[in-house]
Image 1 (cartoon, rainbow, N blue to C red):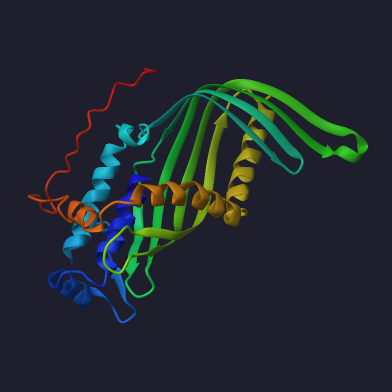
Image 2: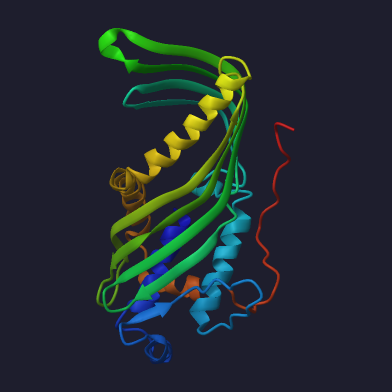
Length: 297
């Protein structure tokens, strides 16, 4: 949420028609004929990318700071530690067609949320949109213990179904999870708060690695079920883009707009523009974060 709040404010800095001349002139030089400005360029391996604009390198540093801060979270905003994310106990229920499963996971840990590449982070000052594309190459999920009660009702009309229970350890990985989309915003003419009007996302997943023990033992059946689970997860994510996008928009946009409401616009702008005062692009990234020891070690 904090990232989106600052993103909305950063957008406002770049798009407001009443910007100071110095910033406005830089924007006009950087925008192409379509009004697009690359706020963030992810360097390719072995290729140097020079900062084109003060906001560009500030945006890069800010995102790197966010990545490091994820090791401590933002408790003042109710955001827990995200690198890694730890959940002591969680229930996961899923039903799709002939497949229905009820699961309980103990000491769930999700690693890799802070390791992402930014493929696109582009502002259009004409259409008031930000287009983004984030790639998470590996998100690894583990649980010290899980239990499941799963039914595969393949031939319901004949009264034939398969039910199994299992318990054991869980190792589960998402490979090349991509989150792309468009954020639309609205700015007041002179004073007031920026507002996100829509957030449309497309989430795609290349593959899944599943090594969950205890499905009717640890033999061929267990391996077969893991293989089927890999296919089900990939298909479920890739085939339900609209539902996932609506869920993300409903969860993120209202609280972000609430956080933006009532804040003095230029005060927020000043905070963003001065976030890297006294720093240069190549300075080490330093945040006020001292990660706690692993409570489950």
